Length: 234
Image (cartoon, rainbow, N blue to C red):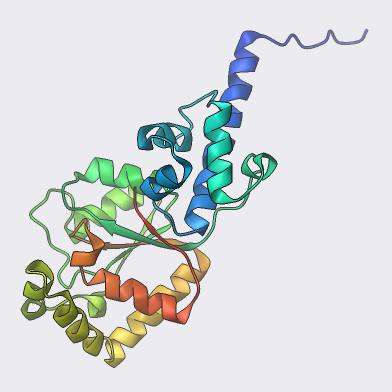
């Protein structure tokens, strides 16, 4: 006797809608990151609210509006079909500052961005913020399936931090670029470049604003070696 046909229930419909929403979210993030755009940049280019884009990228918008999706596709210069077609996540670099964040929300952002490796470029990976010192941070990342590496030679020495804090960015960046010529720094840049060519790497320091942090110089140095997108961690 033939098996009875499967009944297509409302639960099936909801599950399918959820799967489609997650696929769209993944593709949207992949296309945005390939351009090196932040979420705020894409929202501005598409003329949509940042909170709306955040819901779509998290898979929380089960049935996003047609005009919203159309605007996002136009901003990314892709067709609606391309926007809904699954792709493999891109490798590259993410700029990550933990200023103003707690460890749980920070790790959640890394997971949402599908980060594979966190490259810590603090000279001394110790923090007064709970969870951000080397050992505890490494443990939290390991629990989330994220590798942690400390690239000490890419850290900024104490005597070169004031220029980044008081607005003398040209002075601070020039001094740090000179420090990157050392054999140790070149070796760490080689390692970071190799990681970025194979996986999704978040370059970590304290400052939320990358322009006030020496990691801007680090990211620029890597991009001179390899063409990869650099994305601000959401």
